[in-house]
Image (tube, rainbow, N blue to C red; front, side, top):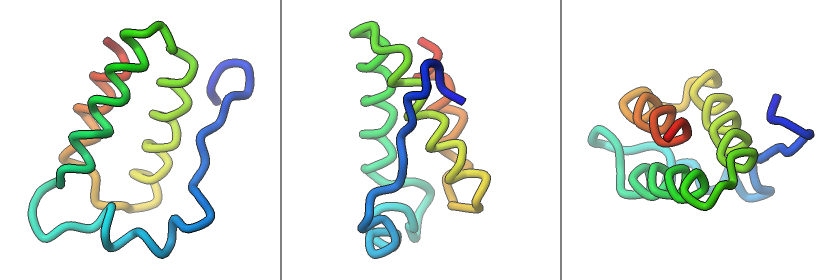
Length: 81
């Protein structure tokens, strides 16, 4: 778990947004690029706990079978730099 109990959770409308935000006909989508930038910016601003909590949520989606395999390695890298 993230340090000090910080947790990022799915929003109440998550299920209704899956097709738009998470499923794609091509490998990845522009939202995934935004996720990479958010992770990187959190780290740049010293918000390491927030970056770790966000990555943990993304790892959960990956574990649940969301088709984010092409992006997860980049997200991990951005959360670590």
